[in-house]
Image (cartoon, rainbow, N blue to C red):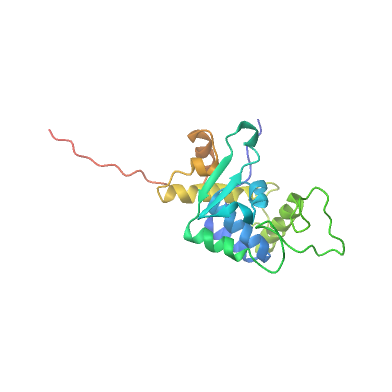
Length: 196
């Protein structure tokens, strides 16, 4: 098995890439960081699934195993992110845009405003390149949108929150894989109290 060459994303890198992204991508990256969901699941989030302080997410990777059905309680920050997704474009999707081309390509899309995965990846790559942070890096080493998921998992762990269920991982070991590879050290707090 080939060793992974992609590097983990840091919070300052995330913030810089975000600054160079279009508004719809900024909202998607914010949701990705807060919900630690995959690109596919972020793109599938719909306004109709948000109600009573929760958002229902069906993780496409795990749906076939009946394990990827999440009801996420919304934090104040996430409520604000979702509210910012409402605009003058009539779309059922939180991540959406008005296509720039003359025709509205609906091939493989549920709605004309839905963003295709290939478009999403291309636009994220443009923002990452525009950031200038990864010039000269080896091919495949620059972080992708997927690294936002790993960064979110790390940040939850840093705050003492176990992100396993939110990420939809079947095991703590899988969550640990996403949490590993970041450069900073997480110190383990221990107490002594030996009485002799």
